[in-house]
Amino acid sequence: MPLSINPNLLYYINMKPLPEQIPIFPLSGFIYFPKTSLPLNIFEERYLNLVNDAFKKDKLMGMIQSKNEGNEIFKVGCLGKINDFQKIDGGRILINLIGLTRFEVIEEINNFKLYREFKVDYQKYNLDLKLTDEQIDTNSLMKKSKIFFEKNKILLNWKEFDKLKKAEKINTLSMIAPIMNEEKQKLLESISLRDKVLALENIIDFYLHEVNFANQTIQ
Image (cartoon, rainbow, N blue to C red):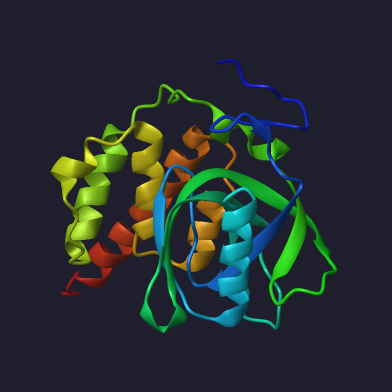
């Protein structure tokens, strides 16, 4: 299916235009990527309202990283679709989000709700909606990632991981890698998958070099 570059980008799952105004869940210290799955345990009243409203409307909500200062947020987040919704004891809700596409925040919308809504634009990241992977050699990145994860004692089922499509692999590594949140935000804002691969490999190279240097003994 050809990709439209019209401002009203199509949301291919239900063939409806992507919403220009979305509810957003700011989450400190966590960054969410397209083509990844994110389980969430919702218990705060404002986010219970957000999830209930989103589920009744179009099942779409945005995730974005909040900054340390006040209510400030980063300018790029990820739109997700609720594909699992369960109410459990204690008034909590368990959901699972499937990442669709990144967005840029344009402005906050004044409302009378407990949660925040923003006007957003998807145009810069229209590559997220392509259904095919870019032809990129990721062998070097994968080898370094396995070493990096092993050094940090992070267990990953690489056999199952290898079953993922290329974009899913890169986004999953970007989301779970033991790197700084600012570095993950940089990966999130990388325009193309190729840009993201290069940036992630450079970050991992830096950490591996630092570890090797720190373990050297001065004679």
